[in-house]
Image (cartoon, rainbow, N blue to C red; front, top):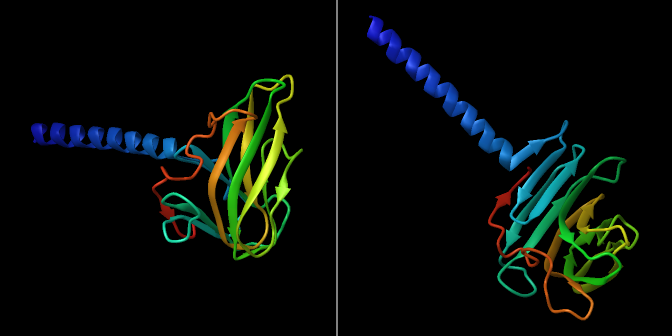
Amino acid sequence: MSSNKKVLENLVSRTKIYLIIMKTIANAVQSEIGPRNVLERLGSWTMFTKGDHEFDFKINSEDKKDGNVSLEVNYYGQKEPEHYLSYYQTVPVTPGKSYVLTGKVKAEHSESFTVSASNWSNAVNLKGDYDWKDFKIDYTAPLDASSTIIRIIVEDIATGLKFDDFSFKEKDSDKELLSDPSFEKMSFEVDNY
């Protein structure tokens, strides 16, 4: 009886350790920071949601501009304060240097979504319904900056949003500063996340 009890205690102990390890791994992938506020790493990009609107996103290999895939996003909520979906990446910059953010977007229907290369001082609203089109944002790093945030933010009903071929480079340079600028390395699909 005593050996069975030890075996059972050992099993319970191992199960607890296993559950702690699994929870730690899950938290490394997703950090919840409030009701329906989720911060999640998706390859080189981070997704952040705030509020309770439904959305889905996927890698689309059928409808892309260049390369193998595009990032497709659908957001089903009407504009409300503190409700949005954001994809972003922090990129190192040199103070005082000038940069260019470019990319391609497509929208089957969009009431409001924005692309930015900083904290909104140069944001471009790309709402509407259109086939693939290019966008360009000029950005000069403030003298106290060591990084900036490249951001896509969706705040209102948007379906069939597709993003491809992003690029962030110092002016007159060929060096790409974004990691996975064309979403080629993402390998995920989530419905009604």
